Image 1: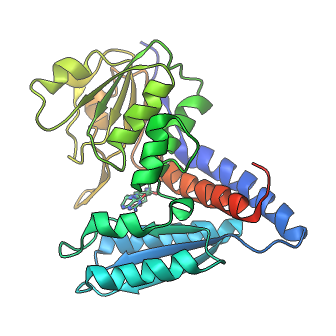
Image 2 (image 1 turned 60 degrees about the vertical axis):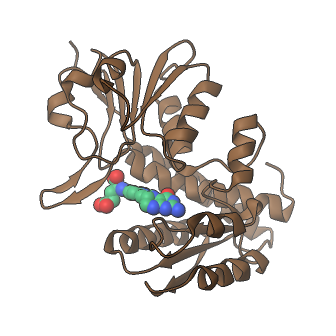
Length: 287
Ligand SMILES: Nc1nc(=O)c2c([nH]1)NC[C@@H]1CN(c3ccc(C(=O)N[C@@H](CCC(=O)O)C(=O)O)cc3)C=[N+]21
């Protein structure tokens, strides 16, 4: 078989960030304010701190003003709600991101429900997930949107093809399944309670893996020539690992979105793109 194609999210994201930067520079030159992105980090998870820093830097580089709120590990739900309310009311803030996971004592649902849907750049509120389900315009979760954009950039057809999603999370598995269905793929979602997941995965023309288990997916899961999107990211003693064992699937896949350099950079790009979309809606600029 021919050498697999690497789906280079890092390069595509950089290209798209350049386009966003140019669009933002254009409205700034017309006298408009800068778009504002608020990032709320609760607690001292080191991985979360790195992600938040990367998101802020990426925003700044393209002309989005990042504002952060860092709350202590012991914060209460009420403490977090107060910060959300403050950003909800702030006219300089277009997007609000609450970094997940929150410490266990905090009611995640209550916090998410407080974010104004027009500022929900993660697309995690019931309102935005409902809009997505109904096929209405809203803000779409970043990782799923980035995956679809990556597939599109590489001209990977979806209509009539079989897609299998591994994982059913609100952040990735569920919304990516909806988006794939909307693009006329035949979608199956499998998860930790699915018997013989490999048998189902082996039917996939497009396999999206968001299971949260390092190197879960091996050659037994792969139909020869399949397009495989690795969404997992694990920081171990041996560096970054995905949910896909790249070495073991390499001889079978047709294309692979790798970790690092695939979905991660696309996720950050879509966060910036959602912030830009929210900004234009707030400023009454055309889409
Ligand atoms: N409310 C919320 N929204 C999120 O979007 C969100 C979240 N919470 N919690 C955690 C996960 C994780 N996540 C990543 C984003 C970018 C990379 C990324 O850029 N990864 C680089 C590698 C960066 C590195 O070296 O660690 C890559 O794959 O090439 C990774 C992970 C967003 N998340």
